[in-house]
Length: 557
View: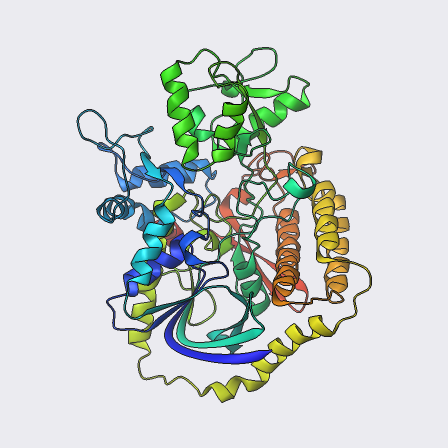
C-alpha cells in the first residue's frame, strides 16, 4: 500500500451525528480539523436515512433535571447523572439551531413545536444528515476525508497522537497525526444472529456499517470501558425492523397479544420492560404480539405513512403493498442485541469533558458510555461538549510540542504491514461472511440472542468466550483482494473484539437488572449490591480485566 501522511490539530474519527457536531463547534476555533469518515459524510451514521422526531427535547413546564430523572429511572440507576445533566442542559438549544439551519420542525395550530409526550418533537428529518454535513463542508478549516477506514490509534505511553487507516476504494493507507483525537464512530451492530436471514441479514435496527470499530480500537489500546452488559434490544415492526415508537406514542397504540389482551401494564414501562413484555408473552404462548392499530382513522393512516417515509420507507412500502395499519394490527418483535451508548450506558468511560482514560483521546455519541437516552440532540450536545473539552485540553497543553511523525515509524509500519499480510494470505477456505455467520450463531445461542429469548448463563458464556477466541485466531488467516474486502475483514475483527468484552461484562454483572437487555438465568433477580456499581473493564493482551466502580457523588451531580 502507498502511505499518505496528514497532520492536523484535531482529528475526528467518524463523521456521524456527534462527529459533525464537534467539527461544527470547532469551525471558528482557528484550529485545523480533519474528519475521517468510512463512508461519505453526507449520508453516513445513524441519521443516514433520516429520522422523524428529535427524541430528547424538554417541553415547557419541565427542566433538564426532569430528563435526567427519566433517564436514570429507565436505566435502573446505572448511569452518570453528571453526564446526563450536561447533555440535558443543551438539547433545546441544539433543536433551535437545527431549525435555524433549515430542519423542518413541525408546529401545532398555535405555532408551538408539535410534541410527542414531553420529551420530543416531530420533524421532517429525511435530510437531517445532509444538513449537518453541509455545515461541516462549509467550515474553512475543516477537511473531510471520505472513505477512510480507521483501524488503529497511534499511541505511545498511554497518549494518542493520531490514527492509521486505509482508503476503502483505493490501494492507499493513511497516517494522521493530531494534537487531540475525538472518537465518534458509533456503537456495534452485527454481533448477534439478526431477525432476517441470508441477503436480508443486514436489514436491522442499528446501522450494519457501525461495527464497533472505535470501541475495538479503544479496547486494544487499553481504554477503560463501561456497562457493555446493558445491551440494547429494540422493539420493532416485524420483518421491516422499522421503529415502533411513532405508532406506540404518536398514535397511542397499546401492545396486544394474539388473544386480544393488552398486556404492557403487567410488566412495567421502562425501555427494557416494553421489550420484555412482548418476549414474555411469546414465551407464554400468547404471541404473536402486535401494536393495536386496527380501527384508527384514515387521517392517522396517512400521518403514519408520511412519518415512516422520513426514517423507514420499507414499512411504508409494506403498508402500500398490503394492508394499512387501520385495517390490520402491526406485528412486533425484538431485534438482536447491540452495544450502543446513545440508548444505553455502554461505551468508553469518560469524564465530564468527554476525555477518556487515555490522554488526548475524547469520545462522544453512541461510543461514549454513562449517558443513555441521548438520541439525536443528545449526540449533538455531546459532540459539542467533547469539542469544548478538546479546546481546554489543547490550551492547557499548548507548550507540549508534537513529536515528529518519524517517532512513530515502527508503530505505523506494524499496522500497515498487517494490512499487507491479508493481501498475501492464501486463505484456508473460509470467507469473512462465513466467520461472521459463525460468530452470530455463537452469540445467539450462548450469549443471549433471539433464539434463547435473550437469556444466558455462565456455562454458555464460557463456551461463547472460547469459540469467539477461536474465531479471532481464524480471522488472522483471511485473505483480501482489494481494500473493500480488507475493510470487511476489519469489520469482522472489530465485532469479535467487542464480543469478547461484552461476554466478560455479561458474566460480571451477577443479576438481572434490565430484562432482555441483561437476562442472566443464573441470577434472575435484581441485586441491591450491584445497583451500586458500574461494571467496567480494561483489556490487556487478550485478557479482559473487570473493574467494579462504586458509584461516587460526582457521578450523580
